[in-house]
Amino acid sequence: MKRIPEPESMDTMEEAIELDKMCQKYIYILDEAMARSVTRMGIRTGKVLEIGIGPARIASKIVSYNPGLTVFGIDLSESMLKIAKENIKKFNIEKGKINLIRADGKRLPFRDNTFDLVLSHNMLHHIPDPVPLLKEVKRVVRQDGGILIRDLIRPPNKFIARLYSYMFGLGYTKKMRKLYYESMLAAFSRDEIKKMLKDAGLDVNIKSHFLTHYSLERLPVKRETSKTQFNRLDPFRELSLSFYVSGN
Ligand SMILES: C[S@@+](CC[C@H](N)C(=O)[O-])C[C@H]1O[C@@H](n2cnc3c(N)ncnc32)[C@H](O)[C@@H]1O
Image (tube, rainbow, N blue to C red):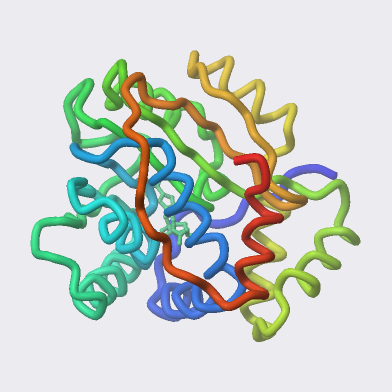
């Protein structure tokens, strides 16, 4: 199946609110999984960049598990940054721990070798051509720093994408299911991912998660072991999470 790109920025307040609501359904598991994966990478202090921070739910979890980290969260969408600001306040995140900036991931307003860790989650599929963004990731991350880019993988055909939108979008509204379905069609295939990494000269491991996602991961050179107690989810969500990130 050919890729069908979707609009890059999630500009309208309606879309931003809908995504924030989705994050409280099935995506809740994905957000928790991302925050735990980041914590297991073993970076306890320093600066983190999250590209396409969206509603800042993942960043909020990351700083609560790793209080020594400071996050710089960029997004193209003003509406999304507004929701992010409200969430940071709602979750009582200490002032200065998550800094929101309106910027484009393809032209980052940061110097070379600035960040100990660069992240993005469910955003790469928004980019028409991700090579410039991946080059920027390579430029701003420290040479000994970590990278974790996680996104949807494109299903083999529209039928499977539709099926996933019902199976994994259980409890979604019609609008949420549509957003999820369109995101799957806009996602990259494994061959496209390999090509874009080669073109960007970015050396990372490609990992698969369950049927739906992949990660581009580079572990930092120095890693501290974690004694972090993760939030306990209800048994169904905890089980789903363990399937999703098994082997991680
Ligand atoms: C599907 S949302 C994911 C948000 C968040 N990472 C999460 O997982 O909850 C994708 C986000 O990437 C943002 N985005 C898209 N293109 C971008 C770009 N070139 N630079 C920065 N942000 C971008 C969108 O506005 C949107 O907020």
